[in-house]
Length: 392
Image (cartoon, rainbow, N blue to C red; front, side):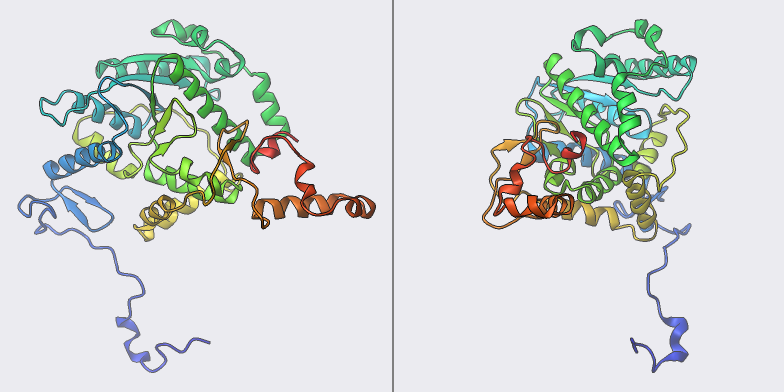
C-alpha cells in the first residue's frame, strides 16, 4: 500500500494533485503581445487578444499546409463541406489565403463538395440545409458541387449524380439503398460506422479524380483525429494509424487526402468564426448513445479527458505521428486500400489472432491436418485484418 504523504497529514490542504484552472483577471494581458486585454482563453491558460488570436490561427493553418509542401500552384483541391464550425472556418481560411497580395498567398484552385446524407431529416429540412450550404459557399466565391451519399453508392457514373446548382433539391428524398439495408441488417453499430467511413473515403477519392483534383481537404479537428486513432487501434487497424491520423492520407496513388485543421480544436474554430462574424450552418442531429459503438465511445473518452487534461489530444496526436509501418509494404487491401504488411518469420499479432480463431472453430481432426503457417491461407481474400469482417 502506498505510504506517500503519511508523515504530513497536517499539510493535506496544501497538496495539489492537479493544478487548478487559471481564471483570467481584469488585469491580465495577452500572452503574445503583452499589451492588449485578452478576450480568448484556450487550454485554460493561454490568453490572447483579438488580433493575436486571429493572426495565430491564420499562421497555424498556413504553416500546416506549408510544412509538407505537397500542393503546387494551380493544383485543384476538393474541399469537403460537412456543416458546422470546422467547415465554415476552413472556407474562410482558404478565401483569405487566396486574397492575400503577398508571396505567402495560397495558389491552388479550390472546389467545394457537399455530400448530403442526412436521411434522418424530413425532405423539407434537407432541402433547406442544401440551400444554406450553397448560399454559404457562394458567399466565399467558390464553385460548389452537390450530391447524395445514397445515390453515389448505387450509381456507377459519378458525373450523373453531381450537381452545380439547386436542381439537386428535387432529389432530396428519404430513400434507402441496398447498401444501407445490408449495413443495418448485417453489421453492428461499430462495424457499420467503420464500413460507411471507408465507403465515404473511397467515394471522395473517386469524385476528386472525376473533377481533376489532386488533393482532398477534410474538416477534421484534433479531437476527431485523436478519437479516430484510438478507434483504429481498437478495431485492429493499428497499422493504418499513419494514414488515418496523420496530415496526409496517401493510400491512393493519384489523390491525397489532407487534414489542414488537425491541429485545431473545436473551441478555437468557434472563436475564429465568432470574431469574423461567421455563422456556421447547423441542423438537428441524432441523439446517439455513446456506448453503442466504439467510435462514439472513443469520442466521449477523448472529449471528457480533454476537459480536465488539456494536453490529452496533443499527446495522442504526437504519439500517432511517430507510429509508422515497420516493414516494407507491396500489397494493399482490396476494400480500404490500406497497406497489408508482408509475411514475416515470426507470427504477427494479426496472424496469432487468426490462428486462435481458426483453432477454436475447427474439429481436432481438422487441426491435426494443418501444420506450420498454412492456417494463414484458409482465408485467402486480399483484405486487411480489420476489413475481413465485411466479407464473412
